[in-house]
Length: 165
Image (cartoon, rainbow, N blue to C red; front, side):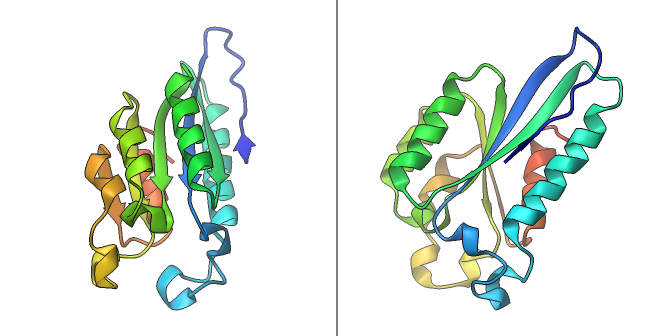
């Protein structure tokens, strides 16, 4: 999903924030509501994008767009990270790698090689769950980690990237 509203100023530059969600996060809102809540993740992220688009209508020197992607496939997540690194308009990445956070050396290596700011997010507090979730390879190499704040963690990650919504 990509939502953007252009400022009328021709001097305005475009800045993109990419949110990448990993395996099974397309089921948030119906899967384990006692852990992840009842709100649909896509709907929540759409509301953040709309807030950002409304903000872009005010006079500014840059327009910021929020783009979200979800994949259950490790290689696709790596391709998204690599493409964001090459994109001069991408100012940062928010990643919730889901279960890959605890197992994927490949995603971790990709983030380690990036110069763009990367914030890792978990909806639940992984350290209050099964022991296999206590090791987070993605958070260990990210610029920041936000976990346990429900879907609000995505908003906190945007703020950490300098995007006020």
